Amino acid sequence: MDGADELRWLDEDEQAAWTTLVSVLLTLPGALDAQLQADAGMTLYEYLVLSGLTYAPEGTMRLSDLALVTNGSQSRLSQVATKLERRGWLVRQRDPDDGRSTLAVLTPAGRAKVDQTSPGHVETVRRLIFDPLTAAQVRQMREINRRIRTAVDPNGSVMFRAHGV
Amino acid sequence: MDGADELRWLDEDEQAAWTTLVSVLLTLPGALDAQLQADAGMTLYEYLVLSGLTYAPEGTMRLSDLALVTNGSQSRLSQVATKLERRGWLVRQRDPDDGRSTLAVLTPAGRAKVDQTSPGHVETVRRLIFDPLTAAQVRQMREINRRIRTAVDPNGSVMFRAHGV
DNA sequence: CTGGTTCACTTCAAGCGTCAAGTATTTTAC
DNA sequence: GTAAAATACTTGACGCTTGAAGTGAACCAG
Image 1: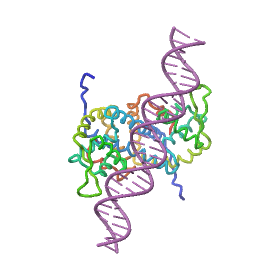
Image 2: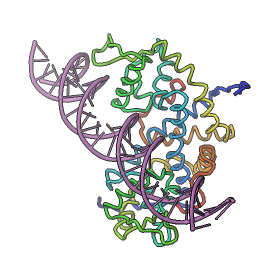
Image 3: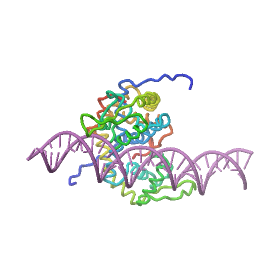
Image 4: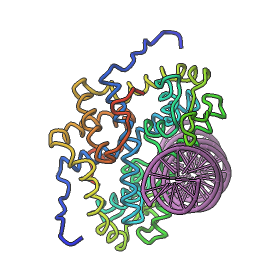
């Protein structure tokens, strides 16, 4: 708090990059949500939760692990899990190994819902993100976002090396 | 609904890129909001609105233009403008040229608030986004996000060529 | 084995954003 | 000149996310 950490303002390239980044941050999630909501009555985050479970053994994962994988808070996941449970797509189970934990288990109906939803979702992701980009840009984007994600939270999501979406 | 628009699933590079992108979409806005909230009692979107006005002649802009520039809906901007007006950072004025429009005018207090808030905000943006990236990556990111933004909404924000943040 | 701490999860209230409906003004078309 | 359509904005209800507080379970020191 003593020394003046001299502030560097954004140069022209940075300014332009920041502007387009904000623009994507503010519009892309809405577009992805809109498609899922229209075609599957589901949020992107809800889809990520179900989809995350399909990659887990037995379709089962501890809620806290699921929160990490989906980049959500425990509170957020807890409420979404309740909603998904009410719809019959997952069930909660006590963790036999640790009484503090709760396991989320994907039901057959939940797996079916993912199978039925993913084509439209992937199509949208491809249209909005990958179709406009070259293969080189896809690789660039991965590294760029990996670095930003690490800066935001060094202990961030396991998703980096774990399964896909 | 007749022909099978053969769906292409994501390959490994795309899957990884998508995972990191989601991760940034889900965590970066919260991190930016958190800093502004803590240091200025303000949302990122509210900051964008005030900041956008500082670049307009006379600190004045039509609400609908301001909504475009900030990537927000008219409804969202309307409510945020009310909030900012209550805090004394902007005022609404009738547009003399078009009775349907309303002008948002930045007050001196509003301009002072931006001046006082921007250093901390820029510092955070630099730390989370530009410090971890090379100059080449900054240029790559700009083009990548520009393409994604265009895919999301071809008639999107004027911000692309207009002023900065 | 006991008191304190950490961890996993849930719940509640408050704040935000979206969507749809409503008002007012201007433009367009006949 | 008038009716219909388009435009600009506001409002209110609803759903979602967050953050703080609370419960219960496991771990750890002595």
